[in-house]
Image 1 (cartoon, helix red, strand yellow):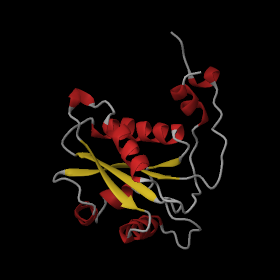
Image 2: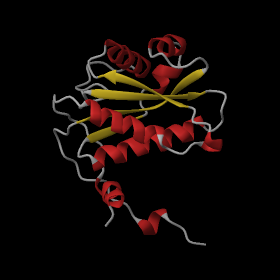
Image 3: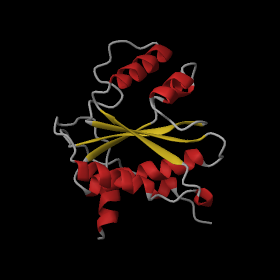
Image 4: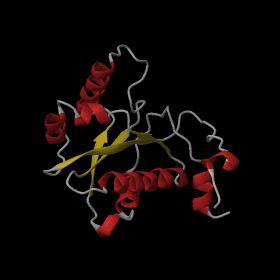
Length: 176
């Protein structure tokens, strides 16, 4: 089986990371995987903001997410203490930015799996980053002017293992 098919088969969401930092080479490779993703009309309109897992803005995002959902005292934050979080933003005026960001984040997740790293694709903070504090967060995260949050991914060395989800071709595929 090819390496990419193996990564697709074995990848699962990682919800626990070691304290080991990613090397510059690992991080650079993951970012490149995201930037190499295809985009509609070759617009290449996805921007990646790289955050260390200890960056205080992550706590602000977590607090806003929890405030909007009426949640308190959760055992983990939305990125499960990963050493690195990438936030992908896209051109808000381009119809396909959300799809393009999804393709880019999957490239990153598969590259991480292929490198023996863990990843967690994150959408749960969308309300916090697109709500009443959207401009504040866009500025704090240095999104390009007119761009907004699309999706995020946490990355690091796995502290826990999880089996990939099961699926049913019979239930999920229709041949015409």
